[in-house]
Image (cartoon, rainbow, N blue to C red; front, side, top):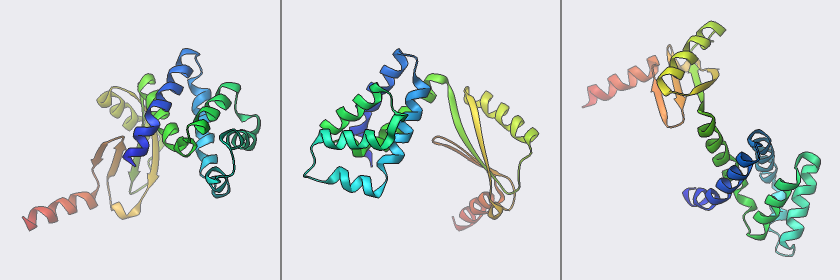
Length: 178
């Protein structure tokens, strides 16, 4: 997985720099997201691995599948990826592009899992507190998981804050084993 990310990084960086220079970050983000999803289709994956097809054929088919969802620049980007046998990297490229975009916008996606549903007021308050702590705009995604018993688990990139009862019980069990 790390190798794929290493291979995808220069392409994601180039796409990001182009989109940023042309004030098209949001458009490129959507188009790369679509390309990543399309590249995961099993039928298309078989086509991408077909040795009898040229890179131009593969790129043309890929762009054709996406229809008018791509602009000319993204279509050219797909052709460059095909020429370098890198179409399989599209999910990683899209993910890295999203990270670069979030860094540029000083924003972060935060997943909050709670034992019970959080109302709008609680979500707003939590988003404000996390925004202050992380120094970024927070986009909160709430989910429920009754197995937490109580409390919340917050995930923001590499940061994980486990304030759940289940997590506290696990810490207590670990301390007792020591």
